[in-house]
Amino acid sequence: ERERALADAHLPVVTRDGARVTVKANVSSVATARLGAGLGAEGSGLVRTEAVFAQWHRAPTVEQQVEVYTAMAQAFDPHPVTVRTWDVGGDKPLDFIPIAEEANPFLGVRGIRAFRDDPSLLLDQLEALCRVGRTHRINVLFPMVTSVDDVDWARARLQDAARRVGLSAPPHQLGVGIMVEVPAVAVRLGRLAHGLDFVSIGTNDLSQYTLAAERGNSAVSTWSDALDPALLQVVRYICDRAPEGVVVSLCGELASDPDVAGLLVGLGVRELSASPSTVPTVKARLRGVSLRDLQDLAASAVAARDAAAVRELLLAVV
Ligand code: PEP
Ligand code: MG
Image (cartoon, rainbow, N blue to C red; front, side, top):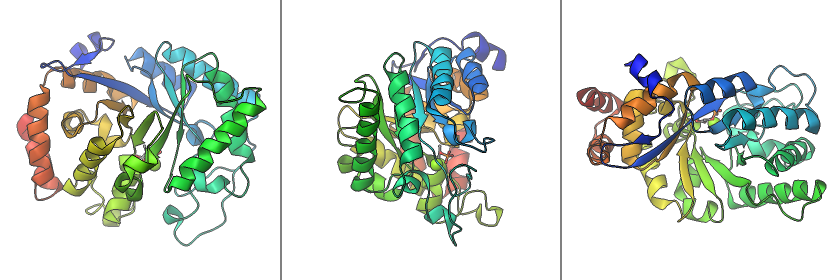
């Protein structure tokens, strides 16, 4: 299976009944960007910038960031690269963006929330993205958004950054999107995604917040299973409610499982971002199935008793 998948890695994905699916790569360095591009990823649906600069003790300058994001954009050219702004807090510490100690970090100052008091490092990052976005295909993705005000605030900072580089507005080819990892965003998707270019479902966090079970805590892993029918139903709800013209992408770990990718497509997702090494197999698997069958599978999965029953359904398909 792997050999065949590698041979076809650079071909697009069209299901047997003609549905087009885009498969991108999650990246955390220039090297993984090149790896993903070499394995046939059609761009990156998630650059985890907090991982790219995880070892840095001081914040990278605008110029240093321009260099890194440009190299990533060049690796994936002509496909777009979606760069997520600093997703600090929770399980992701950054020396140069200190977060005060909290009793419940996953429910605390995370992602976009960390910049409300002092947006300077976010502005530097957005300035770098505006600069690269003038000449390369780049999208900006805001993490841990919860409210309409978060979206408005983040977009206003992007506007500030554009002015810093002498533009009256962000470069028009720079796509803007938000992570959907907080259930409140899924519930109000029509309102929150209005005017955006895309949303990206982060099933790693969306499952921990939907199921009230911390990711990475093995004592509650029975409850935090991302294949829980409740989570699948939320994913379907998001796909159904996305405003016209807003692309729904999914970049959680679920997308990297070739057995699960088809189920996500059946739920309505048409763009997946997976870990680079899994891209060829995910693409190959999706070429061999029909959307009609995947939609039937999704209907059964949403109605299943629990995650274990969903896994049995998946095994029956493969
Ligand atoms: C997610 O939450 O699913 C996600 C893709 O982001 P991260 O794993 O970096 O929190
Ligand atoms: Mg997340």
